[in-house]
Amino acid sequence: MKPVGLYMINDSDATYLTLADRVKLFAETGFDYICFSASQALETDALQLAEKNGLPVDNVHLSGAGTNDLWHEGLAGDSIVERYCSEIAAISQRGIHLGVAHVTWGKESVPCNALGLQRIARIIDCAEKNGFVIGFENSVSPDLHLRAVLDAFRSPAAGFTFDTGHWHCFAPESTFPFEYAERLVITHIQDNDGSEDQHRVPFDGTVNYASLVPILCHASRLTFEPARRAKNPELYGMMSYEKHLSYIHDAALRIAELIT
Image (cartoon, rainbow, N blue to C red; front, top):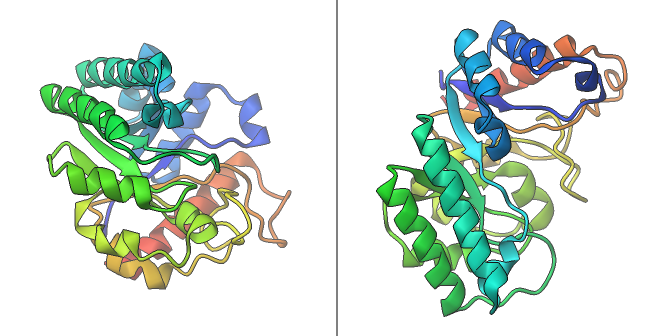
């Protein structure tokens, strides 16, 4: 069965738990690895807690603010390149060599142009020099920009992150993820009802995971990204954080069994 991992969860109960408590619960629940944001990965305490609890840090979500500036004229876009490269270098020095990045975010109209590709080339070059692999993620906008990036750069440092929830609520008719499945390096498995990016626990929304087997079968491990309590009416508001983690783990195993 494929290993299953998890990002930190934005849950009201978590505000009453220390980071140490949360990481310990991840390990006790049975997850095989943990993932952090860039800011968490750059904190020594977080990495030490993961190691103490026997949870390898598999990948990091690089900072996404201002990503659209990559495609616009001006110094802001260059500063985004510098931020990505700085994070990649620092995170690599901590022994983590896999991360997620967006190429666009939000519903703003963003040009797809040579300038943006030139900037992303600089980011990929930085990844190559640091032995780092970037999984560029499908996001809010149609797949125009991501397709352009993956077609332009065949480097081993440039892979694909597939987010099931983004696909379901933003571009459910797109065949893009199926076309690029062989370049899959990271999964973000989460659910929603198709109306917005809700980051529900899998099977609490309407994502048809069976239809995604042709993509997910390319994953070497399954990374889950639920951010809120389960929305199942029978469970909503009734679970402790510990039970919530167990519920996510059960969903993770169901999907792992589905694609094994």
